[in-house]
Amino acid sequence: MNRKTFLTAALSAALAAGLSPNALAADGRPADVKPSGAKPNVGATFGNTVESIYPDGRSQKIWMNPDGTWTGQSRRGNPLAGKWTTRGDKVCLKQTSPPMFGFSFCQTFPDDPNAGIDSKDLMGTKIHLKLVNGHVTKGES
Image (tube, rainbow, N blue to C red; front, side):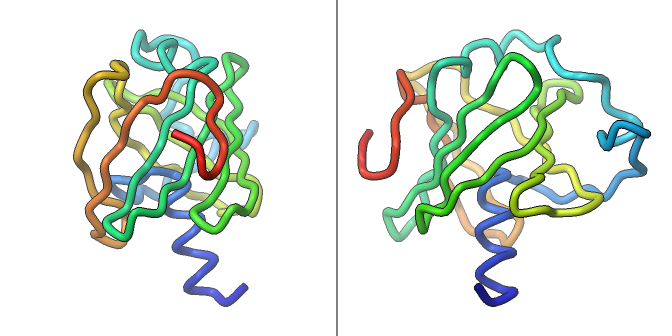
């Protein structure tokens, strides 16, 4: 996988509206971000799929876990994984597989399956985020 493809997959997986390098705490999370669990909109994602839809029609999906971890599938179907925390009204994702060292990506997540959120990824590409009921895999939704 070339560097541009890797970065695009990793950044889109993070559903990033912006990239924010942070100092890291001893446990690997950004030092200024509290451990996961406090935001009401995050609970809506458990057992469901957060889908990021790109203008070309391809999408990537992530699945949030109550223990502060997430897994996902890139637009090319590659597996992704990491840890999540919250900051204000945003969910911050740190990707650990494939690794993206020292970066956390923060995004407001949809919490209503009937309404999505228009946003941009780190590269400035417009994306539409939506919450899909259930654990939806590539090709479904």
